[in-house]
Image 1: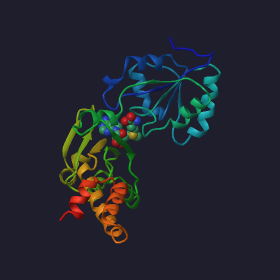
Image 2: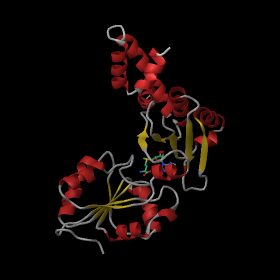
Image 3: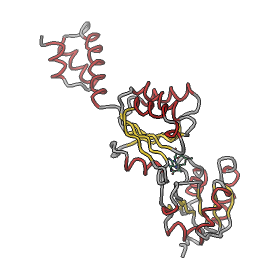
Image 4: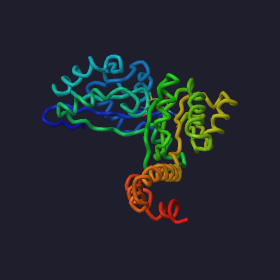
Length: 283
Ligand code: SAM
C-alpha cells in the first residue's frame, strides 16, 4: 500500500530501464500501478513500457516545455491527497532529465518525496569503466556550440576527479577530438555505448585512440553513449605548483632574504620548504 503522511499524497521519483526491460524493479511497477497519476516526460514514449507492465494509471505530460506550468498543478493535487509518480523517457528522472522544478517545489511545500531507484546511465557506465570511481564529477551534456564546448572543457582540464559526460551520436566525434586536443591525447577514457542493450559496447583506450576509432568506424557513433575520462594526473598538478613556486621565489628573492622568500613561497604554493631549498638555494 502507498504510505500517507498528514493526509497528503506522496511524490515518487521512479527510475525506468535505460534499454533492458528486465531492469524495471518490482517496486517501480507496483508504485506506478498504485499512484493516482503518472507524470511522464513523453507520454507516447512511455506508453509501451506502461503497456508491457500492464500499468493502466492515468498519465500526464511533464516535460521541459511545460514543467513551470505543470509544477503548481501537480503540487496542489498532491496536497489534496493524490500520489504522483514522476518518470522520464529512460533512467532516473532529473539526471539530465526534467523533474527538478517539481521535486524542488514539493520539498518547499514539505511534501514527502520518495525515490524508487533503478538504472541511470552514469552509474551503470561508471561501475564498469575501470577508472577511479571513489570521486567523480558528472558534467551532463556539453554545450552544443563549439566555442562554448571548448571553453567548458578548458575549465575542466585540471579536474582531478573522473569526469562523466552524456553525449549524442551526432556530436560524439567532435567531442572526442576536442577532449583529446584539450586534455591531451594520452588521457585514459572509456566510451560506453548502448548500455544494457544488445549492442552494448565499451571502448577503453587513450583519448587519441578513442577519437581515431570513432572517426574510422561509424558504428561506434551509433546509439546512446556515455563518455568517461580519467581526471588530470596528480603529478601534473605537483609539477605546476613547482613551476609556479619557482616564479614566485624569483620575484620574492629580489626583495627579501632567501630564507624568507622560501618560507613565503612555500606558504603561497604549498610546495615543501625542503624542496624549495634544494632547488633554489643549495647549489
Ligand atoms: N535520466 C537518464 C539517466 O538516468 O541516465 C539520462 C537521460 S539523458 C536525456 C540521455 C543520455 O543518457 C543519452 O544521450 C546518453 O548519453 C545517456 N544514456 C541513456 N541511456 C543510455 C544507454 N543505454 N547507454 C549509454 N548511454 C545512455
